[in-house]
Image (cartoon, rainbow, N blue to C red):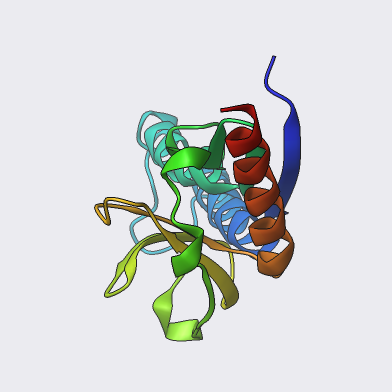
Length: 160
């Protein structure tokens, strides 16, 4: 059994609230027949509500989990995730970077790599040893994560 060394969950309250408000508006507009050209039937409204709920299910939170073998980050129910073996992380490349507001939220691609975040601010960037990918996550606990990963790698080297 892999022992969980670190777990952090960040909820995107404003993102969920926005989509819940849009969904509520669609339902109310359909029920009360709002507008010059109202939605004429629930057959049209129900697919809109379902499509509007998909981003909520996919992105309502982000969970960073580090166990003795894998560092992972997962959005929502787990449709979007990244898992990297702790042994593959090159901790000499670890750095805390600041993500500006215009970098966006969610699963994003930048010049430094693909990152996962729920809000602007500090993020942890660690390249893999082969430099093909990275563990790039928004977290204000970057130094703590680096220390945990160093400890896991040190323990693995002692066992080897």
